Image (cartoon, rainbow, N blue to C red; front, top):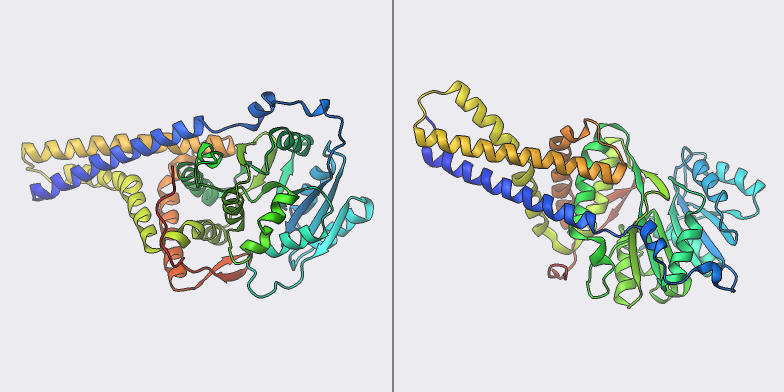
Length: 418
């Protein structure tokens, strides 16, 4: 016979889990509904750029690439179709071991606007892709800089619309979220959690609010005025940070520059890693930014994820098995089990709805993939735990086949300002 106090305690946890997921889901839905869309912003621009007599400013597109032979050609094709005429395309190869440089050279031979730059060995103290970004900046001649990843496809009007918007609104650093191409089980299982976490902790309206300290940009698309980039020290100032895009955004906002992040799924598409090992390393890299500030406190997030996401499923299965295999429950015990089962069922349904909404938002498709949420949650929890201990011990966080040490910050900051 299962002790009544144990049944009651687990039922209370089930009710709390239900309330937790309903709260998170509601907050996520509200924040996603309020996220600014570039398409709407363009319709409401204060000034029409076509009425301005000054010529288009030169734009330097800096594409960092490391072992991207399967994607770099498509990316360059989409950039060469851009309607924005006054630009240069600088591809910085970060010591690729495949045919990436060779492919870029074929484009360079046919297009005077395309240039290949070899990043060479990283100097001491530089980690991640900050070094190739900095090499691209040193070669650039434009008044605006656009940092891109080498695995994205852009609509022909992307650059023209974004530069027009930035100039019209006086924005110093601009970024937008892409439509994400997901392949395989692992990508579909984990992306909703990553997207949901970003949207909960860093809602775009807060990021765009100069009074809030929250700041980030999407590394796949960072458009910045060159003078603002130079003023904050560019990538050299964040050379030791593996999540350099978020650190760059923080520096810009602290310096008083106007930061803007919006949804731009209709303008470009990028891919999320589908191989489990590299996907897991990508999660560790992204998580290291927050864990760097909060250290072991980050383990609380892993516990909360377990209680809110996995516990209802565990309770529902165990209570169903208990009822079918064990007889003689008292009326009070049966009532507690039934209440807990109902609460767990509501939490599971809420989780499926939330995951479906995130998949629709990020990748514009749902299918049967929301059913994978327990798998994605387990991977996410393990990544939080492993990243926390790696950083606390000074172990390397891996990026593109190389491990970089990312230590916990000495001072624990307070929670992000609202």
